[in-house]
Structures are given as C-alpha cells and as structure tokens.
Image (cartoon, rainbow, N blue to C red; front, side, top):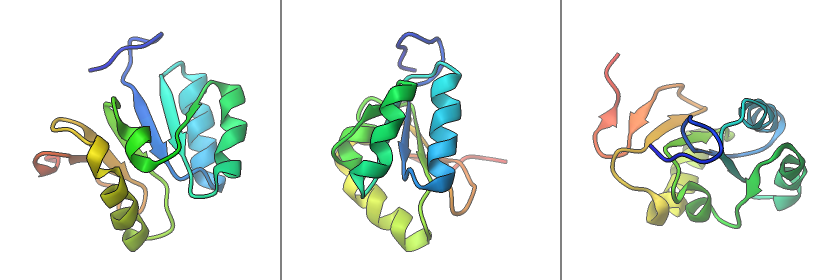
Length: 113
C-alpha cells in the first residue's frame, strides 16, 4: 500500500460529476492521498482546493494508486475509461466501479464476498 501524508491507501477517482465530486471531497477530507480525473477537466479542477491532484488522463490518475474508484455514467463508460487507465494499472490494485458496486482486484477479477 502506498503512503502519503496519511497512513491510508492512495485513491484515484475517475469521474467527478455530481456524485464523484462529493465522494472525492469526502476522501480528501478524510486525509487520504487523492488523484482525480474527469473527461471535462473543469469539473475536476475545483477539487484541488480540497487537496486532490488533478490528472490529465485516466492512466496518469491511477498510476501509483492502491484503490481506483469510478463514478461514471454506465458500464460502457467504465470499460472505456478503464481501458484508457490500463497503462497505469498494476497487479494488486483494487477497483470499485461506481456502476456495479463490486470491488475488483486488477489481477484476479471480483474480490470474494
């Protein structure tokens, strides 16, 4: 697990619309290191004031993260954005797609439970 100023995991949040921005604000307020990305960068930029790093691409956002959270419109959007994130993913990361609500290990599919 990566560590920054916090002893918690490093989080990447992809999709900072209404729900994603609220989640990102709560994650940052909790003191977890956070990187955010949104297709429309202007929707992500206000989160810098809460302490989030703004990424230029999904791959940049997930690079170095322990947990990847997506808050996107639908399953095809999640698939598209995660394909863009692929160069930054590594085995052992966990992904929480906001559409399905299931936790996935990047190297082994859905987590048990």
